[in-house]
Length: 150
Image 1 (cartoon, rainbow, N blue to C red):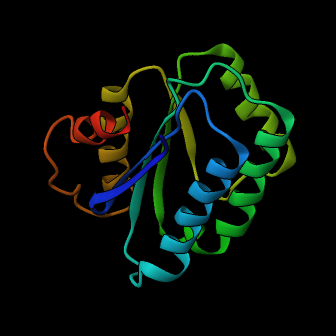
Image 2 (image 1 turned 90 degrees about the vertical axis):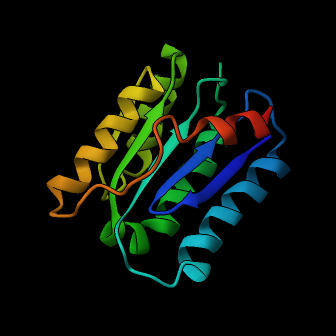
Image 3 (image 1 turned 45 degrees about the horizontal axis):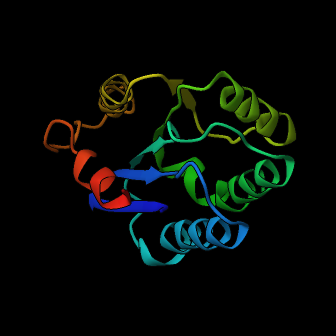
């Protein structure tokens, strides 16, 4: 199940499941877009941690959907996002993300990691690099949402 969790705002979590339908993916990306474009009224900085460890493949249509979502979110996220960490263990998925950036490179910084803790530490540092104090969120704040995505 997809997860988009903003409970530790401004640290946001996105969980991408290993198996999903296009309808589920479209609903998820629509919810993310709706949040950043309408529901989140603030222009305060945010960090996005995307957990894609369950993915083992990404077809061309899925890559295009992600690229299209990045294009639609660019006007909002390019001024708000301090960092976008994507955690993935599969070299195939890293290649798919590279293919997405061939279509359209987002105007915000996206870095891939193999471990959630490394991604979390980087996102916290990125607040400082953008002249902001890192938000107080508990260590391993993403675990509760990961259990719900189960």
